[in-house]
Length: 200
Ligand code: 5GP
Image 1: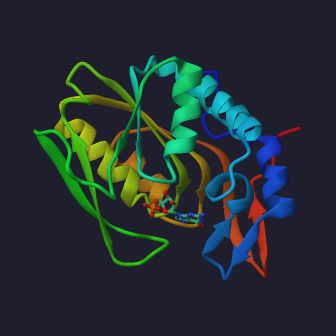
Image 2: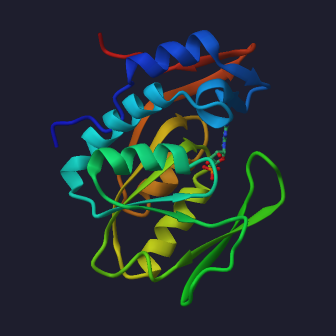
């Protein structure tokens, strides 16, 4: 595999270093271009870079979770010219048969139910997961389990940002799924994000 799945993507690394808000030592906020206000050109560039790394898996569908996964999922799906399916959180009445997982909500506390209709992930599917952040990996692991329960293959799980000091990367690899990310946060300290640096 020649393309490095987790090479730091310099335009994103630079923007996180210069602009992100760091809350304590756990939470990184990039609401102004990804999670609240979205910059179409920049998210399309990031989606294009993730799609370039994912193309080698010849995926047939992108799978993400409502709500913050939809924007990055859509731009990756568009670049790969394949459909996007998102597991529902807020209106979990989907066409049957349905698959569900309950996961902790990392940013809001409590629990959330993810629901997926088996009409939209089928056994012939080659799935790639796309989400905004990888933290403990509970969301991505639930998506991988649901896709597998539907009979599909999961080829890769990809994220705009991963927090390397959490358990998510290892949890996904333990399921035999490679991980692709554009920015890797090594630590959050004194209001600053320390990131893996691009090679150039
Ligand atoms: P996980 O399931 O990997 O523990 O958490 C992933 C989800 O939690 C992401 O989809 C994202 O919505 C949210 N999340 C986790 N950590 C952060 C963070 O540091 N910043 C932001 N903005 N969202 C986060």
